[in-house]
Image 1 (cartoon, rainbow, N blue to C red):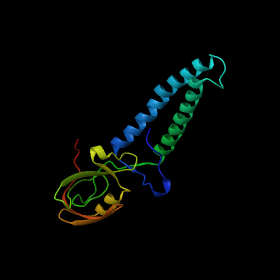
Image 2 (cartoon, helix red, strand yellow):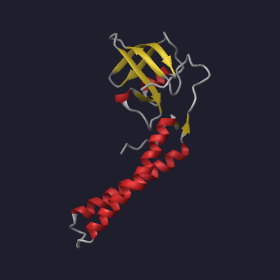
Image 3 (cartoon, rainbow, N blue to C red):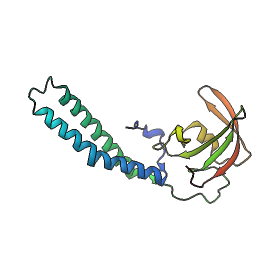
Amino acid sequence: MRPYHNKVNTSRYITPEGRTHLSEELSYLWKVKRPQVTQAVAEAAAMGDRSENAEYIYGKRQLRQIDSRMRFLTKRLDELIVVDRPPDDTSKIFFGAWVGLEGPDGKLLRYRIVGPDEFDPKRGFISIDSPMAKALLRKTEGDEVVVIRPNGTEVFVVTSVGYEMQK
């Protein structure tokens, strides 16, 4: 399960793919995972003394976590704004953009700016709330970007901006 977000600093934007993923997670929890855990808890309860029954105690804890995540997802899905089209000016970096960067060491990087519910560093997805994304917003190809990170300041050069779907 993904971590919860601090609503004060969390934007409400999400890509259509991200919304689909959250909806599928909610459906899985409701239709598959919760019934499995409920069945396991019922079987553990049938074994007798619940106060020393590890399976029962663990199952109840799992149910609380599942229910909490389902409440969060239900509420979050209601408040999200799906961004399903590119901006009018596709030469600038906005939500959903794929951005090519050259780092200070000459290394080429590629990121997609997505919502906080769908960030995934392994896929190059960075949250619009991250310092990198905030520094990139409204920049165009060729611009220098100064990013203040916890370990210091770095300068990047934007090498490309695009809104096409890429894997």
